[in-house]
Amino acid sequence: MPVPAIEITNLTKRYGDTGPLAVDDISLAVEPGSVIGFLGPNGAGKTTTIKILAGLVSATSGSASLGGFDVVHQRAAAMAQFGAVLEGSRNIYWTLSSWQNLIYFGRLKGLRKSAAAARAERLLTDLDLWERRHEKVGGFSRGMQQKVAIAAALIADPAIILLDEPTLGLDVAATRTVKNWIGTLARDEGKTILLTTHQLDVVEELCDRVAVISGGRFVTDLPIGALLSQFRQHDHYEVRTEARADPVALPDGFTAVRGDEDTVITGHVQGGDDLYALIEALRAQGLPLRSLAQVQPNLEEVFLSLVKEPVNG
Ligand SMILES: Nc1ncnc2c1ncn2[C@@H]1O[C@H](COP(=O)(O)OP(=O)(O)OP(=O)(O)O)[C@@H](O)[C@H]1O
Image (cartoon, rainbow, N blue to C red):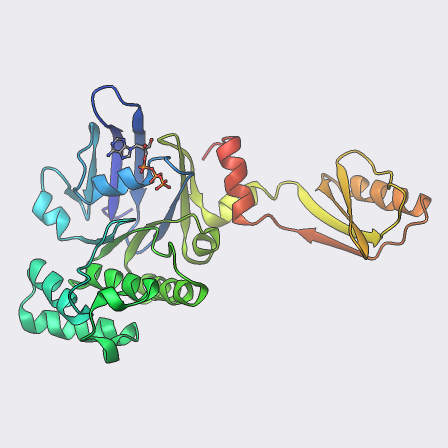
């Protein structure tokens, strides 16, 4: 791999002298131009890790670097590598307009006024905010404010973008806009993006790779396809038959739920024999086979089983 865009080595964080480990010896190397989803339940250590990368929290031990620059020992160079939108913190000034915010953050990042203005125009146009650039951000909807926050993080055109819950609290339309925009930044502009989210459809759509953290430790770190295929070793089938008052007798491993129209039977099938046994059982009870489909787990199912039962990454 070329120099990783984001590198974390044996990183540990304990808040206070006696608190539990919020981050417990994690290591990660993210290839330039990739999008990595950082997933985990509440309190898993995601925000702490991002704050260490952003230079806002100091690590207890281990190291972190951005674009090859150590966030502690080469702080200025490391800080110039990224833009961040952090969860729950107000990343922009609500009493200023989006235009004023972007110029302010551009100047703060060391841009000349003309460069900041050119970049702000492009970002606000891309995000459909150009017409309203002189309105105060405080009067914007949550989705528009989030778009301005992301634009502010991108004002100096950083190579690395850290996004903590970028779609939190957004409605469907605003989520779609932000999601599309993250996709464009990754695909067309080659940015390296690390994002945390509890919205797994966001991860499934945008990420090349997923690292799942639980209790401060990585549970797994895999390309998204590999992660899903771990759960496809056994085919999961859904079979529909008619809804009857009597319970349906099923071979082991299958469960039935009776709806108004159909009875839906689901189960993991480890070979053709399992499926034949089910079909034979239905036939013996005079139940017609209305449909038979192979169903794939979605990322949410995968994530929940990872947190419950670790697999090797
Ligand atoms: N400033 C702090 N002082 C003390 N403990 C903290 C502090 N910030 C976080 N923690 C603790 O560190 C652990 C990890 O928290 P962190 O915010 O990193 O998790 P997270 O994965 O981002 O969770 P969420 O999905 O809820 O945002 C938690 O046990 C949390 O209570």
